[in-house]
Amino acid sequence: MGVVVVAEKEVEEGAEEEEDEAVKKKKSKKDDENNSSSSDENLVLLATATIAGGIVALNGGPEESLEKIQGFMLSFWNGLIGNHAPGVGGYIEDVYLATLFFGTAYALWRSSAVPRPIGNPIQRKSRTLASTLHVFSGAGALAVALYAVVVERVFRESPGWTWMWVTSSLFLVNSLSYGPLMNIFKASKEGKYAMQLGYSFVASFQGVVWIAWSAQPDAPDWMFWAVMPFWYFSIAKLWESTEFCLALVPEVPRDVKEEDMSFGNKLNKFITAGSRKRLGKMSPDAATLTYVGLNAAAAVFDNCYMAVYTYLGPEQFWHTSQLFNDSDFHLRLVKGTTGSLTVALLIFISTLGWRKQMPMKYAIWLNVALGSVGPWIVLFWHKLLDPSEMWFPQFVFDPEFAYHAYIPSLFGQ
Image 1: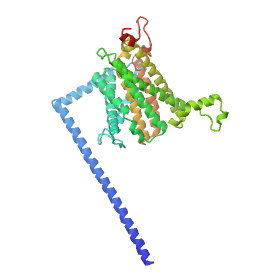
Image 2 (image 1 turned 90 degrees about the horizontal axis):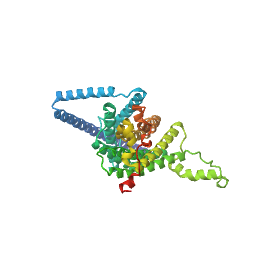
Image 3 (image 1 turned 90 degrees about the vertical axis):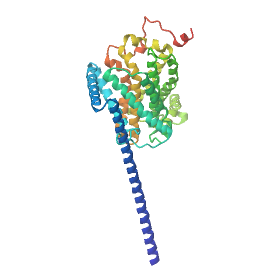
Image 4 (image 1 turned 30 degrees about the vertical axis):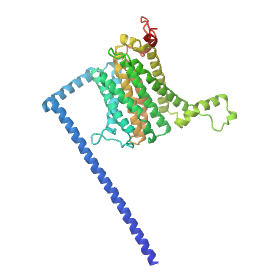
């Protein structure tokens, strides 16, 4: 009996020693991680200080740099106040763009591409090439797109060709590199499909960007043909939006047997079964109905937009806008990018919600307010600046202008 007690005591002591050893290892690992993190943060601060010092040196020293900063801030403030649009439209523009500005700044602060202590990045769960491309292209796209929004609102100017190519390329890389991450993205079927729809919108908006820039006087002739591949994303978002609508159709009662179903119920089951399987159970609440309805309308509109452009070509497509709608013709160079920024921002915020980095109820309503309503505000941005302009200039045809099919005219027909 005594032997048994001693043995049990030895076992308990051994278990306690192993537990203590595990705790020590865990603590040691945590200390190593903290030391490594502290070292990395010091390197970031050192690199930041070096870059700042280099910029000051290039500007001729501290005094000259300070003068330039003061001059810029004065110019910025004067532009911000002086270029405020008159009337209610100006306040709507300011509220929306301010929301976009602070939302994007927050997203960049939480982005994995911005290291501590400058940012507060969420932890990356994948270190593959695709995920790295996705993270850094996303952060870059947000930053350069926000730059254009600020330049437009403050100075009422548009960036140039280099900005356009860089921004569009970053958004395309970001929207095409998310696929592998879906395997580790912990969200509902509806959430994953919503993200897929969001990236289809972002990719298709690059077609809208290219359509706008193809009307520039120095645009290359091949830009018209370069727009055509974006039909794929335009049709994809139309189908994906339709899937959401089908998934919300009232389901045939489960207790109804196949032979007892009416023709309408059989048709309902046949058409909606695949969508329900892919999206799962959806609740027809106010937020969901608003999100689905506005996205479906936007997808239909964008496909009509693509169709008219494909038929008319750059010059004819923008004819009415260029002659009679100055604000729309000017804003066309940043509208597509601002729409991309809006949707990309909401995808990131939704990701924060699913990863419990933000209350999901806030992420949902931000998704509705910016992700669904936002692109429509961008579409009618010109009306905020000048209410007298047409709602849809590209769909209003000048009776004094001779329109013709663009593609046949390229071949002399």
